[in-house]
Amino acid sequence: MTSQQSDTAIHHPEGRHYEVRGRRLWVETEGSGDPVLLLSGLGPAGSHLVFHPFFSALAEDHQVIYVDLFGRGRSDQPAELTDITFREDVADVAALIEALDVGPVHVYGFSYGGLLGQALALDHAGLVRSLVLANSLHSPEMWQLNHANINRELALQAPEVWARIQELRAQGLASTDEELRTQFAAATKLVRFYDPDNASLLLNEPGARNMELYPVFVGADVDFMIGGEVARIPDFRPRLKEITVPTLVLAGRFDRALYPKLQHEFVLHAPQFEFQVLERSGSFGHVEEPETVFARLREFWKAG
Image 1 (cartoon, one colour):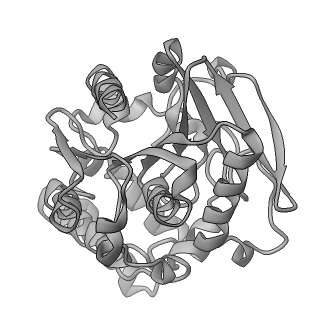
Image 2: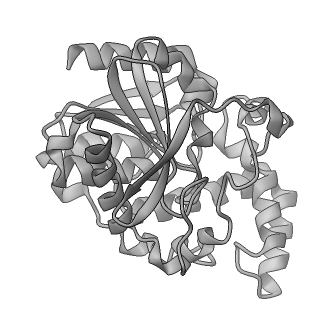
């Protein structure tokens, strides 16, 4: 999921490091108004770059806050990759909101960022004004189902890719080994976008994704069996009814990974949540339908 745009073409808002809990986190801000904190995905290894340049449209009337989690993007790197845990990520974000002195904030949690958002809304509710769960997850079980459906789609829609994946696995390779990762990446456009050409809209730059962290955090064979820190993330379903802040779940009709049926489970466990399907999106609604997404966000925040 790389862009053909050069690194020099990427515009970053003004940013600097904030020290929280003995580590420096990179934060960029733009705009003014009610603060919106963006928590990124691309697995647990991505940086805030996934939100550029799309969320600049919100800076017309909101203060948009981008953050790189510890060990990702431009933030400090750990001595050991195993120092990065879900619990520590939650604590870092909570401390950062306090350090920025902007709380309570609207939290937009994309993918892995939505898991952080749920933990914040449950255990640090005073820091959260509202919560958006965009193509996110509620449990390790859902993470596993996500990969199972991707594999099913590949087997059905890209049998030549799936055959090569099976060959490499027969040789003993785990799914995060370079050769297998290349095969899965080649089919990303098929399973994560309404329009495969929109994959080129995602920006890339050195350090935008910590690929060494990825197999440690999710397990070396994550495309078939989750492991690592992901397997230890709480199942939030039993507690979702405890979330009292306004919460909106966004799903992509053509998301073959975190597909709409999985997203709808949020409102089955928490009927107080709002739910919307984006009809021309896959996993990246803010990329494929930015105008629809931002109009809905403004409506949601105004009502809340």
